[in-house]
View 1 (cartoon, rainbow, N blue to C red):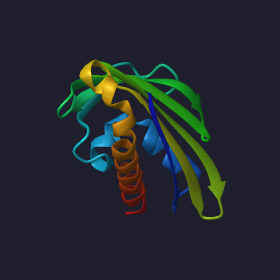
View 2 (cartoon, one colour):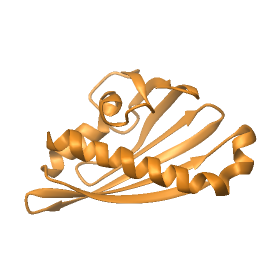
View 3 (tube, rainbow, N blue to C red):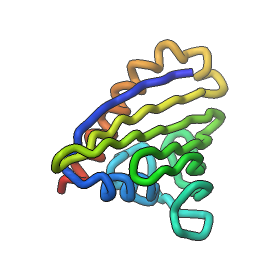
Amino acid sequence: MVRVTTQITIARDIDDVFSYFADLRNEPAWNHGHVRHVVMTTPGPIGRGTAFVGDHPGFGTVTWRITDFVRPSRIAIEGEVGSGTYRYVGELTPLQGATRFLGTVEWRPGGFLRSLSPLLTPILKFQARRSFTNLKNELER
């Protein structure tokens, strides 16, 4: 398994950050090049059990399900991409005029990528840092 954690501070209210992150239909706007064409496949409102499907260039169809939903402080999203599985956990803490977002990504690559797991850690760390910085930039716009 490959696991990385990134922490950022976003100059937005915790409720805004939580709501935006929880709606995975927003992910193409901030996770550039990794996810596109996301649709919610369960009826609203968004909460524990909500499912989404999208396209991940290079890996194909990706599916997500919200497995933990404690508004506005914690969300966990689990899914499948290609032959691998992953889990995102967002822990949010209110700050004066901002939100601290601690994001953890755990990826269990499948197929031939499994044997490359030790080499994938720095790549995932770079991509996670870039994606969460994009999230910050999108929310602060």
